Length: 323
Image 1 (spheres, rainbow, N blue to C red):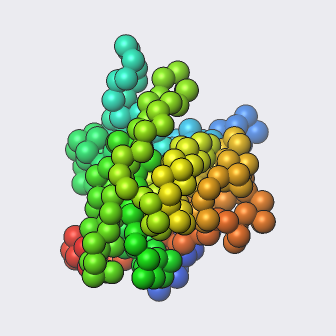
Image 2 (spheres, rainbow, N blue to C red):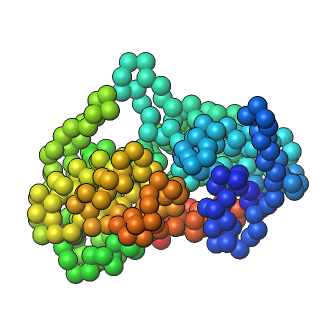
């Protein structure tokens, strides 16, 4: 097995390597004066089981397009040089939110990204908590491994809840299944029932509306679960509705913290006691007062390491996720 990373994701990849007990394989990246670039492995990959780590979030130095292009070229380079199997390890998968046509002639970028990765030679794609798992799995023809944060977040949530009544809420109807799976794992860990709720949400031309909260949250510790936090408005709306519904304490859990635009302000002025995200996207848009304060980062690197180990040794991914 050889584990590579492109420079933009080195920090996260080093955590994966440490959890695996291996060294990152060496490579070279060069930037040219006209903006073009190249990357090549500095070790032979012929006949090897190769894993390439690259998260596709925007910033701080490269756009999602830059990172995607570099990943595609590097995957193709691995195939060009005889790698037996090439797995793209993509902690945050860009363009996964546009998984269907919601307006006439809309693009379906989830499928286009899948086609690009397959064309570049990816035999397998590993990612975490995509926006729509059904769309993700249907978009690819190569093997896909969809990891999720249920166990990682549930272990943290158990300590927060204690003996209090608990409710798992989705901030929109589309995330109800995600919240349900999280609630079921939480019930198993707590050994008692956990309530459920969800928020009404409609989006048109970038404007979000809908204020109806379905479910009883009065007096409960509420855990709002989503795949990502971008501008923070969805979480702020949902937490406010839960507070209005009588919730005692409200926490947010999301795999990916993009924290774009006015997210920092939205989190500061929300009804959330604390927000939990993973390190698939570094929190470079937040200041130090938020990170380690009202925002806590949980590492997803050990989960990716276990998945890579299972793939390399033909182990069970389901056993990893379900426990």
